[in-house]
Length: 417
Image (tube, rainbow, N blue to C red; front, side, top):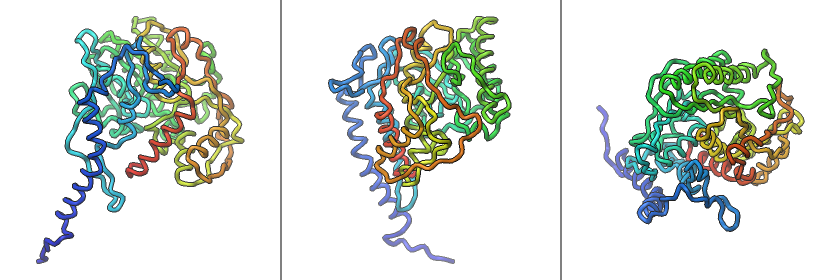
């Protein structure tokens, strides 16, 4: 029989040391957070219009008309600080903090408080929308099958009285009583939606039918997410129905057809946004998108890979701008599609150079053949969004890149990617 020696380097001793170290590391952040709550620094006026500071720096996001104003510092605390876990690089272990303190959320009167369902709410865009809706004081139910979504993206709300997370695939029917539905469930990056093309089409078509049917039954508002491939709302597009993107592009087009069929036949209250390229914290590091690819390659000191000559253009919007637009759209009565994107156009090569400069790396740019059906230009006409919603992008691309690089750096430091 072996003998366990309880010396200074025993498992229990090491555990105590690690716990003590973890507490020391987290104390500064948690004390600052607690002080801010006690002093009332994170209680805010949703009707205020203070979005920019005196030096034109963005200090808040949202719109007073939708009562969605939230201090940027509050959101940054959520996605830039892994405050519920501490990573030990020596042992490659993660310690999860046992105490849970939630961020302050608005206390809404019952007539203003809505029960809101977000499909795909653990994904990149969905999780940022969930943060905003929670902080605004609503009850939020997230359903996600976690194919591309991550529980960590919404883990800071688990256990909150206003929050519920359910593992569910929108391809299967789902019954619940809600006031609004944000239908965001669908893989959006090429490696993910091409991994199982049939599943991608099912998610767009059957998932949309299920959510529209739910909205019809409970008389809820529903926002649909057919990501944009035309340039303006009146352009019908030119899509290859048998190409590698077809499962995604055609699925979204059918989803839009279904949305308006339910509106016209069954009077379902619908909104449709066409979303252009969006980036920001919580992007999947391995999703194959331009921004995450470039940032991860730059942070690792690798050369940045461009597919094609690099002179194809894209319009990149920061995720906070998109969430602002989605909430404004949901709270209007406008039924036609609306483009949400940043009309500032960059070549892929220019974007790569911006990231190289931000990371301050010696990485170079290399080129590979362009994928089939890769669009040459993509730039939104946001006239409708400006006129109908009073919305336009506020975030300069450079400032968005700074925040996204910082997020990926901290994820690497925390051992999460």
